[in-house]
Image (cartoon, rainbow, N blue to C red; front, side, top):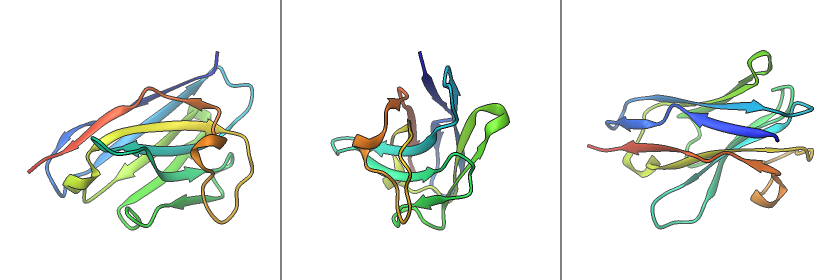
Length: 125
């Protein structure tokens, strides 16, 4: 019943920006949300995460300073703002929901209970 739907992906040139949305429905409670990405031919990797209230979040070093995560619980939506995009950011981006407490870093993939289907981000010069 719980579902996550990503949107906001697309084709952009290097240096441009995109804002991804993760819309949650059918959840009994507000969940922690993580963003992951999977470049072509590579494994899925964690990008960012945010806790239930939005008071705690983390960003992986490879995108730190360019990406930010936020949430609007009134809209059941978590955002990933991506600025200064680079070709190496090209990937399918996924959001995931989990319940485990985290501190000092994001939970690993195995700790998430629900996943969206992904949205394609392509950065091409």
